[in-house]
Length: 481
Image (cartoon, rainbow, N blue to C red; front, side, top):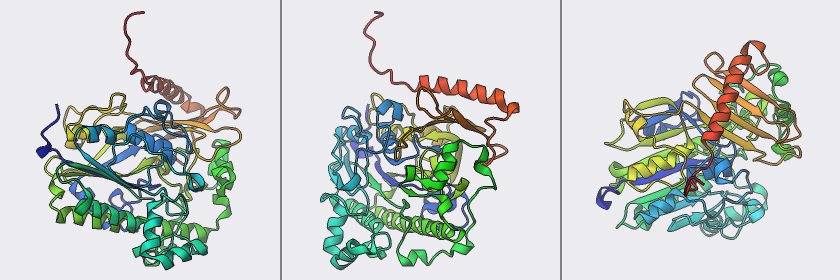
């Protein structure tokens, strides 16, 4: 039974694109400057170990919206369309009396070369879609705004100066902040509680930011990539391949960067994070000014991470390091959740939709596979947790000619990554195994170390059990036969 509308909380979901879990001061990063998000963490609950279900955009975002694993919802790779029968949590909320809106990226279908992403039955009354800041379809609302508000800047960007380094007032991230604030102030249906999704594109590559943000960071002051000499020698061969060329040969690989360039990339990445942080600060100030802060659940997270030179890799793809698949997650709900607390338990992106539906009193998704995080966030003594996290990659990024399929199982102290072989692909079966208690940076692969064969076997068996447990068996059984 839903709670009365007058008592139901609003929901503000803020999601970035390609932001590592450690790209926040609240996660222990002493170099990045994120005062607004750090303050949000101080007012809410920070989850230290949140894992996405795929290391690239579209499959991961589908898991957020549907609370289902990629092998269940069917959007297994970028460029694949989410089946129309899959239900969004925002549709459930809209049907249950919420006013729902979105600004920015969605990415649940093909978007390359200006392709217009088709609308799902998504529940969004307000839909201000722009896949990214680059030239694209005529329905890219950021470009419509930029062309009207800053015609000279728009023309210069199209002529070659690009969109990444536009001044702050014309930047994509500023537009996301503006549109979110406009919704809070003027566009929402004030007769209903709301759920608004603000999808930033930053800190996604290409690596650029307004000059005032670049000026905040000195590349030479930042730490170098996390790696060691010869790190990839005993790791799956695809990682060496990706180190030479990212995205199956469609983007520069780590080995093509000089040490100075890697530091410049990191500085630009932190600059993008700081830009988002300032926009989040503006949004939270508007929420407060509108008298909405006390009855609004604010969730901050990201769809996956970025290698950023760690482990001699760039961008994302068929890799399951924490910097690629572990993301920030902060939930603030004044008066309902404790402030300034942290949770170390393993949680997943499939859990976010059930958490929102639980908090709002809306019905659960009929085929959802996640679980509400509210008991854990509250600190309930009887809160049930899984003790594992699952991530899948099925040639999900730029496709390799010999398909790359990997599956990760993370437990409390161990991470197993299986690189599948025949009959899934013509590649050799291999993998990674890390003892996270002694090697939290995932530098030393224990997959082929004989002393660790028993734990590898146990984890591979557990992975089989997890895959069976996450199969979709929601089709009703009518009788014994």
